[in-house]
Image (tube, rainbow, N blue to C red; front, top):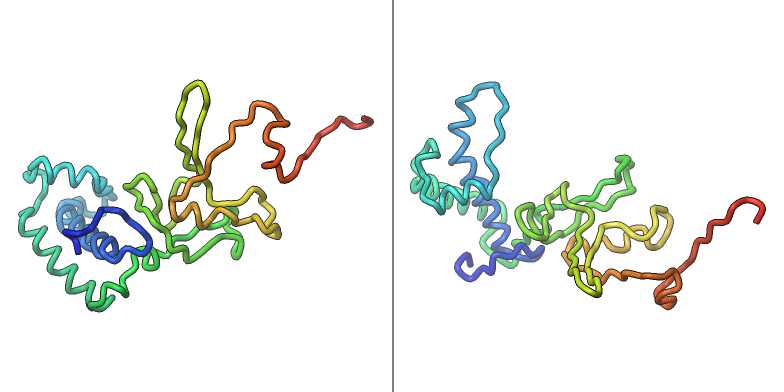
Length: 205
């Protein structure tokens, strides 16, 4: 399965689920002996991308353990733990379902967020989505004579939780689907795309 994997973190991917379990266990074996030596001092583990860069560049002397032994041990132990937890049928493994991504309300109001999302992506990917942290607004812009852009965000066009569009774009955001953004040069452009208009006037007019 690892050999056939396309390295994407789709929500329904079985091997992305195994890979993330193996990766996290490998990072623990590589760095925890060093971090434990600091005692009660809180030290952050290097980023995953930094760790893999060191491994790929052969800078194995940086790690306080035998790298080959740690890689093989982490794989064996991860496979044993993984199958005990998820079973042996890859059809039962789903990366997004296990992560249970959540979008909490900014004011932490219970019931006003979105929970148990089967989200694609990973913090280290372009679709940077963790379990509880992710960029809310993502945008891709092509600059030129005509500005073209695609983007998305996890809410709707309204902050009113009673409105049907309150959570309209959550699923597309969690799946990494983008919308074409409309760069209007005049308020009257593309009236067929305008759902409503709010006009502000000074008092007495």
